Length: 262
Image 1 (tube, rainbow, N blue to C red):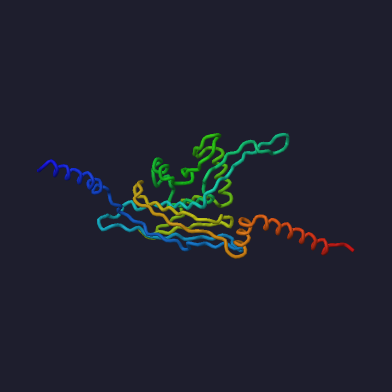
Image 2: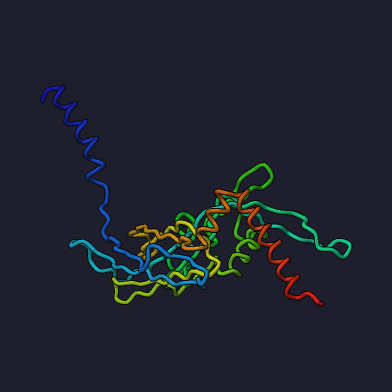
């Protein structure tokens, strides 16, 4: 074998070798959502979507004796928010300190078929951001940007306030396996849910290791008169402000006539 042929064979092995050694994904997730477009009107009081799907195995993959676990994370439109801490001074509550959260989800819901601590070890939970405590919530701390520990008082207060409004939630029974490979999960959307695009990340686990994942999305939009008002406020701010002031004046004038005492 000539030196040129040896070089060609070596290069072919270097290129094709890693590809042949790459493990094929044994499980594949097939998912769908009951509604990919949620419309918000004046009568909107919340809604629950249903995520459903199945786990498909290739012909050479045996059944998992321990079954599967699943974690579904739904994150809404990202925005900047501020959490303030109040202190009582001279009998008055005033803002003492604040922390800005940067590019964080306005809505965050984590659902699983059992407690996340029992699904995967701590290092996997941190790496895959499983559970609200492990989701990155970047803060501006002075001149630095960091994601602090879950016990940080500002982070705890931020999560608590979002939870009280139903915008952050975590459920250890939100995913149900109907059969060993068929599953469903509910996605509760409260009345205060913001409009925008929502990402849905589905991660499949077996024996503490992630064996498959997929993504999908849905959007929440305003329609009808609400959409007209929102568009006018953003695109024609001056005209919207003048119209609002005029309506307030007219309302006050009409009220003075109706309730005028002769």
